Length: 249
Image: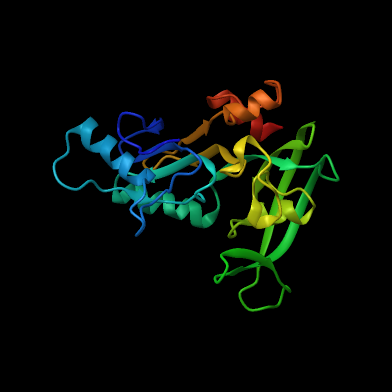
């Protein structure tokens, strides 16, 4: 278990003058809260402060979030220019994300597009189905591809067409394949101890803040997933080639 994230153990995936992408382990908060528990932002600030010998407070812009039990790539802005330009890309949904998930059971189709209408129940912090015309109800859309099934679990690759609260967790549960360990959406603690859900952001593609150039970042799925599925060839590999391969599949 990771007790803290410091400049020494932070995994930096990409860094330039305006942006920094890092790996978030499952179970770690992206941003600090009143609990005072370990969070990713403090680790990134410590890295920048040490690497560049910066005095005083370090600016770091939060561009997007991942739920605490989710792992994967998180992108931050190191400057206000980077924050403004990348925030616009997130708003316009021009940034491309690839997720991988281990789910319970096997989905009904090899590939499919899922469309639901969802709203957030703030009392129980859970996504709920709703009628399309209901106030606060928003369309949620994703595409999945089944990569491998072994035993009680399947490995899926997921592309989001929208970014709703708990969207992937709800939509996969709705087709009878909740993410492993995701008790909130109907799964049991049934994979590797059950402390965190088996969902990870494995690919991120975005335009650089000050260049007309796209950056593609990819990471492998967590080691315990690879070991369970016998290190199968369809799992993502680190580096540009691996990410482009995911986009082309």
